Length: 432
Image (cartoon, rainbow, N blue to C red; front, side, top):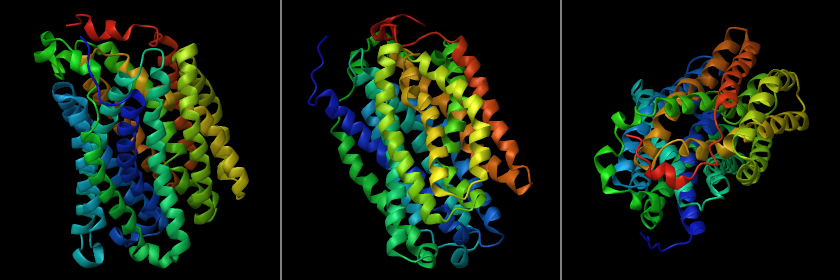
């Protein structure tokens, strides 16, 4: 069967990726600007206590990601990747608007943090479905032999979303005073995100549906996106959980939490920290397709093993040195060293998971176990780090991250290479 498309592979990748960028911008704007809006919703306590409160809401938002992975993953497997991607970005727009318009604790009291929590729950559902569907879509529209390269744009745009949030933060830091940012300037970030997400709804409606989904035989119609079908692949389900565990903890430690760590522990000023994070993440973005293309040549497993070994050995030294430095250049080098290691996971995370499942449950198979692992480990990383710091045992967190990566390394060492199996075989074999 020949499936006609309106756009080239690159065109569809761009359309899917730009929407992904805006989704993750909205998600990360919360983490980037929490140092400014924490007092608006949680007015009492010292800086660590306020950041702990906002980190708690950040973590709770992650609890909805498995729900989003299930609901939108099932929707994507039954009604198409394009429809699910359009729905997910619509939900993100609603969440961003709720945060931007929240009056704050001084005006509506405890309803303010409650409304903030509701917004993050909606965004959690959105991101839970976004990751799985975008990962599935990018891997399905890519030609065989280049799936690693094209799927790497999942994390290119994921991190670019964070970069846009940091870039806007840098701009606002130069235009507004610290007091203005704390009082009202942070709202600009969420208003921008809400309007951009609305624009992306139209963009995603113009994408081609993936050929894999359109070519799926009618014999799979009743089994698409069902938990029953997913449970026929228990090994793949738990493989996703295991390979995600260390990767998500490391990723959120060295990207989202780094800003707070450098301010709250290293004692580096906010403006320098924002610049350090921006430059380091920009280089990190460039690394993704390079690592992805390398995986098309040597396989996915060697890169995962590199991350597992280097992450297990390097995490404690890197974080220990970073905690003890006040020098911005040293902090940048240490953060960059960590990101070189983490890229072994992020660059191929999407395609490895997609290659584990057949087309009729691919979005659900990627989304649900990934979201569970991310909610349990990634979403709580920042909260655990701040809680241990508050108790005077911050260095325990370094060993926690190491332990999570080590568990994933064991999974990588025991799993099979996924890149060499025919994509068509995975789509057409009768696994039910």
